[in-house]
Amino acid sequence: MKKYLLSFLVFWIFLAEKLNLEVFILGFVVSIIVFILNKDSFSFNLKKFDTEKIKNMLKYLTLLIKEIITANFLVAKVVLSPKMDISPEMIVYETKLKSDINKAILANSITLTPGTLTVTLKDNKLRVHCLKKEYIEDVIDSKFEKILLKMER
Amino acid sequence: MKLILISLFLLGGLFFFTVGTIGLIRFPDLFSRVHAAAKCDTLGAVLCLIALIIYNGLAFSSVKLLLVIVFIWITNPTATHLISNAYFSSMKDKEVS
Image (cartoon, rainbow over all chains, first blue to last red; front, top):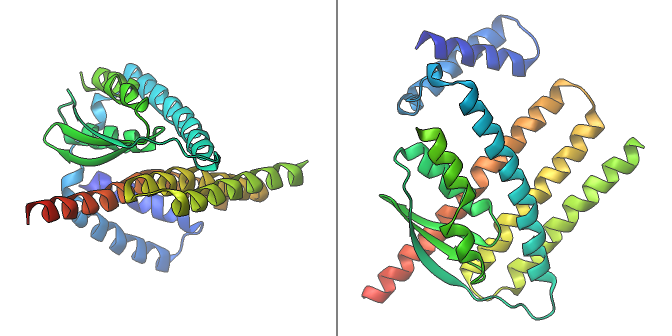
């Protein structure tokens, strides 16, 4: 607990850009409140990090940025074309991921990829809405899930 | 040089905001409207913020703007998911009754 509180306080002072008694006391109070509100979220431990995991994370981040940019151009193209050729469809997709946080990351990434949108997430079933039928294949054989599966091991 | 880069990024951001708004009006149902609103606003806002980072140069405010970008990328899909989830559950309720 002390470790988290100290890191929050350092972060607060870093954002405040100066250090005096007022900033310190306010930061301390805010850190305690943030810690109490998010007690359940600190389940992962930092000791499990190794170079392999960091490499996978960087790979994931670059893939995500690339997908976001292509997604934006694709949606822009569909919106601006004179006759919109959309064929909305809802599919149910099962993930092999185990931990909740990884499932949430996958759901958010699917929302950010071109033409797909996560509607509900229950147990290990994702309900995905696709703007066009072509995008269904991208969801079923997802690049994100492969990297996340590697990270889970 | 800096001015050209800033205006390029700002114009790009504004372009994506415009596309998102047009999509919001043109698409037929809620799910496809959410597509337009969610996708275009992420890149539009991020491009505008990158322009501001270039304008600021290396300063503390640039780091804060970078944190804002991370925040947008986490919260935007979450909000989108909530909107569509609410619509989906209300649709299911209507079918049952």
